[in-house]
Length: 237
Image 1 (spheres, rainbow, N blue to C red):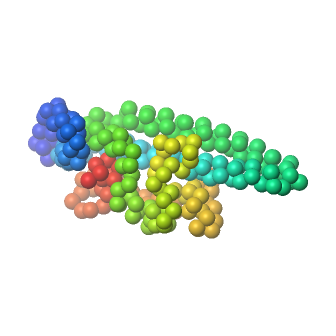
Image 2: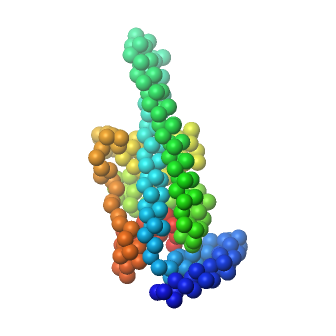
């Protein structure tokens, strides 16, 4: 392993140029395979995988906020429609709508902060093939539509297990560039489930599988949930 680690780092400038040529030539999969091979040859770096874990937590939290915001907007629009139909309860409806508007302002700020945190995490990511692969995945808007992530979403009761198509489109017209799979904040899942889970107060998310980023999880010879998750988010192979 020390020799492979040395070779991977020694020839990185050359290999990086090969990656770029492959990607520019439309051979994205081959470029990602080359990045993965370099990372496999490198020695385990705890800091690197802790950064990946932070990235995943941030990305998951941001999806929760966006999906809950979309749910609140839907509720607000429904109340607005009721306002024109039942003017007799206008005071009650307006009060509730104002409360929702205040909540939406808070979520807007939270999402903005989460997006800033994403950039902070990416900037702090150690340079290397894993960071290049992750950034490459982020440039592809439908990166999350891998079979593994769709199956995981469906297994957790998400919309990929139904014909609604929620995961194929933005959750909100206000955020057309934000795509992703279901969280406990998904309104469609809540309707099917029959009850609401307040992710802001829940002690844990029942739809999340805990994973480790220790050397055995990342570099071990056996298949693991962690490796599948990394492949979905980083390599896409």
